[in-house]
Amino acid sequence: MTDPRPLVRSLSAPRSSVERVLAQFRALRRRLRERARALALVAIVFTVLWFAGGLSGALALTSFLLMAMVVAGREPAESDGEKERSPDVEPRRRGGSGGGNDREGESWRLIVDAVPDATVALDHNFNIIHFNARLEELFPNIRVGQPLSQLSRHPELNAAVERAVTANQQVVVDLYERVPVERRLSATISRIGGREIRRGLPFLIACFRDLTEQDKLAQMRADFIANASHELRTPLASLRGFVETLQGPARDDPEARARFLAIMSSQANRMTRLIDDLLSLSRAEMRVHLPPRGIVDLNEVASYVAQALDPVAASSKAKIAVTKAEGPVRIRGDRDEIVQVLQNLVHNAIKYGREGGRIEIAISRVLDGSPPRPRVLLAVADDGQGIAPEHLPRLTERFYRANAQASREKGGTGLGLAIVKHIVLRHRGELRISSTLGKGSTFSILFDEVGNRS
Ligand code: ADP
Image 1: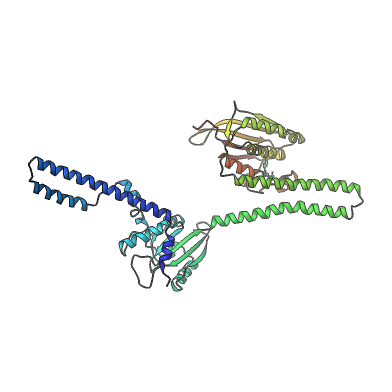
Image 2 (image 1 turned 45 degrees about the vertical axis):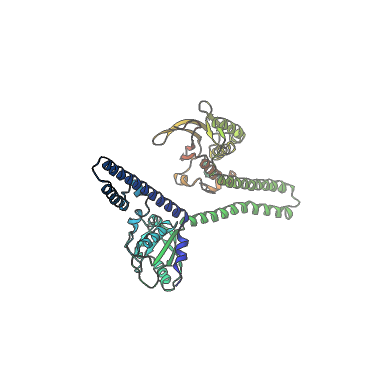
């Protein structure tokens, strides 16, 4: 059998252990201080009695020594705070020191508690004798005394346990669960007990890791790469086709050449837009955890974007109107990013709005939330075709389009709202989308105003 000690040593997380040692040291210091205070009090009482002549010197000294021995041996009452911090009180619910030598019992429990993964200790009958808080998060109904099969009915888990016991080696197994939620767990089973049965001491340790989130992220990354290459491949294939045509059958056809070159130019522009948006998205994702340091006036940004996109709106006979709030409306932000957010929203309002329609950019101060608190609202509304309700929750996903054909025809990349979402996240804002089919859509963002912290 392998020596269990190295495993136990490697399981103890240093940070929690240091905290526990410090807590024990603080409790010891408090106890010593209490005892010193009690001894001083006893000394004063007997000195007073001796001076007052109530006791002879020898009797006072003997009584003092006897009282001192009693005080030194007394276990001081723990304060509530101390009880809360004391590491040997908390794990009772997850299994007390049921046997073995007390010191040994406590230390292995502390090690299980300190493991960062969900961990359970089992006895030689595969019954649960202790588990940590992370395990309780994964299996909320878990109780000490239950058999391992109660944790998961997976035959693979039982087989892994058998293997860990008979082959005396660490066994790792993946468990796919469908109910109550779909998830993938990785379980690592290690036998740490020997042949001799020692009651109350762990025989097996099982650690669980929830890999569901990790799987989802990997899937999203793979989907993103597949989508990005698909979006690039389409215009590239079209470009290659036109180049071949121009080199071959249309070589001496000036009319066809002019037509094909115009299409090639629009395909090249599409690829450029896609690459620009991919770069913007990756920049926005990278900076999402860095709070912006600058100050941006939303009124000023609204005027700037309305002016910049006026010619684009005019090409579909639409009008952009701006309604500002009083005075400067200052938020903590990165001006270029806030400009990009507003540009994407107004550009969408133009693309999916009505020909000859009206686009409104409105800045206002509102009371929002419960309890209500003052915030600033930046809203972009159009009177276009609107969006069906089933699409609303997914609009900010990368490459998600309510109507892929319409988006491509209008030069969309499917990344505009994903960029908006990440920039808004970085600015600790909140994006809300509302829409009525046939009437139009409103994209609103709530921010905190600088200087208004109530
Ligand atoms: P795209 O480049 O396709 O416009 P976006 O991420 O900006 O990508 O938008 C995602 C999808 O949301 C669009 O394809 C479109 O279907 C829908 N959408 C966005 N804004 C509007 C709007 N103002 N009106 C109607 N649909 C919209």
